[in-house]
Structure formats: C-alpha cells, structure tokens
Length: 424
Image (cartoon, rainbow, N blue to C red):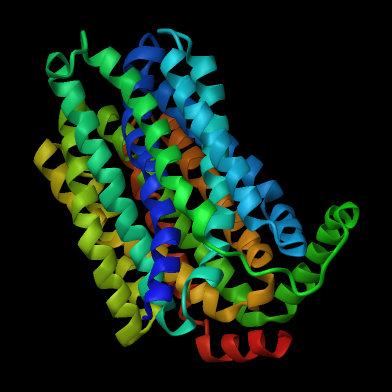
C-alpha cells in the first residue's frame, strides 16, 4: 500500500487498539470477576451468572434495536465519525464510573456496565463502516485483520499491566487487589480516550453521495432503512450471509463474554483465569494477522469455516474440562481463531454490500451480532440456572456453530459482489 493508504489504515486500526481495552479488561476479564466476588458476593454462583448474562443481553438488545436506524442516519448525513465520537465518549465515561460503585451494589454496577457496553458496541457500528474510508478494496481482508490484531495487542498490553496490579498491588502503590481493580477501570477509560484521538483527527470520511439538510437527515434515515430491508430481502447472498453470521457469531460473542464466569462457576481460580485470558490476547495478535493472509490467499469464507470448526471443538471439550491447565489450553485455542473469525466476517461482508450505504448495512450486520449476544449469554444463564450445572450451558453453543456453518456454505461471494455493484 502507498504511504497515504498506510496512514489511513493505521489511524483507523488504532481505534481497535483503543477500545479493545474495554473488551479485554472489563467485559471479558475484571467485570465478571469483580461482579461475582465483590458486587454480588452474597448471591449463589448460578444467580450471578444469570444476572451477568441478563446484563449483557440487555445492552445488546438496546444496541440491536437502534443499530440499523443509526447506521442509516449516519450514511444519509455523512456523520459516521460523529456517531462514533458520541458512543465512544459514552463508553469511556461509564467505564471510568465503574470505579466508584460500592461493594454489594450489584444493580448500580449492572446499570453502568450496560451503558458502557452500549457505548462500546454501538461505536463499533460506525468504526466498522469507516473501513470503507480507510482500506483499499484489494487489501480489505488484511486491513480488517490488522484492526483485530492491534486490538489484541493493545488490549493485551494494558491487561498485562492490570493483571500485574491485581497480583502485586503494593508494587504500584495500591493497598490491595480491590483498589487495583478500581484503578484498572480508570486505566481502561484513559487508554480508550487517548488512542481514539487519531481516528477523529486524521481519518477523512467520504461525504454522502447527496447532500441532505440537517432537519431531513433523521426522516431520510428512517426511509432509507425501509429501502435497505427491501434490498436485503431481494439480495439473497446478503440475507443468507447475515443469517449464517447471526448463528455462529452468537457462539463467538458468548464465549468472549462468559468464559471467565463459566470458569469460576465450575470452580477454577480467578487468578488462573486472568492469566489464561492474558495469554489469549498475545496469541490472538499474530493469529489475526495469519487469518488475514488466509483470507487473501484462500478466501475469507474458508477462514471462517476453519474458525467455526475450532469453536465447535472448544464447546465439546469445555463442557468436560476440570483444571486450570485445560482452561489455559482452551483459551489459547480460542485466541488463535477468535479475531480471525470476526475479521474475515467483516471483510467478507464489506465485499458484498454497496459501499455508499456502508454504515446502514453495517447497522444490520451489528444488529444481528448484538441479537446473537442476547441469545447466547441468556441461554447460558438459563441453562445454568435451570439445571444447576454450568457445564450443560457451554455444550449447547455447539448447535449455533453447526447451524452457522451449514448456512454459510450456501453463500456465493461472487454473486454477492455483482449484486452489490448493480446498486452503485
């Protein structure tokens, strides 16, 4: 790529470096741990699992309901960066606010966590759509994977510091692990804010194809979403892919958000889980880059199939594991495919949608991803609560991966590209 293209790609990918600190330290790591041991310490483990699953589902539902409309409005007004700024700021402020929640106040913790997760998830709608403005078409697989790779590296580096703070709080001038967790929430907020600056200052967003008066942006946004729904029904390839994505990404997002909670529910130690999660981040960095190369050489669809197969293996083994060593091996295995599946799904979808409606179509894409994150955590929570055995909950995720793979096999990328070009 040219020097100019590299600049655009770098400032775009740095946002993944920035907000992945929330996904790693807060969503996947410290919030489930702190929630179980501090904010909801007196509750039964199955009850706290249900509460955490419900919180994740609630945040996802809110984002899912508004994602397509927000995307349509952003496209109509050429304001993807402005929407990204609003939701990033929301996530940053709420993340920092978690450090102020008192012990035992689980409802306040859940409320703030929901708002922070909405900021994180809704912001990604517009970040994903901005890949159109950052990446040359012929390098879309690599650029998408680069974003996830930098996310793993950036999130992992901060998580490394945060884990060290918990294990050795006195070295950092902190009184105990509880204070270390609180400070970690503040660190994530500052990290997210600092490394978000480049995308807002240096990435130029392409103007909309047709200028629209501000007072008409919302009205036209709603009209545009109805048009897009009709187009998705007519464009069979996009519809099939979104259905497949809905199925398999359910399992992916559920594993991300519920892995630590699951490990604690079957009796594994919190420190061991944090170490396993930390190692996963650094495995994920080169693995995501590798999947980008797989996408360029053998196709994004092939790479997604590889990742789904690995996830299916993980759900079966995970239902019977009993030691920290097994959890570590499984975490490394997930780290090898997690970013790859997400990156190649994003780049595959980018190829089969019309570019001038990127945020709108990514609104639908993220809507399905968030609806999937409603079903998965809620399913795990209910299965755990009803059976009294958390092991059954993770095994049920295998059905989602199998269904997603079967539907994905019906998706024809070449037909999708041609159909998207016909709309330009």
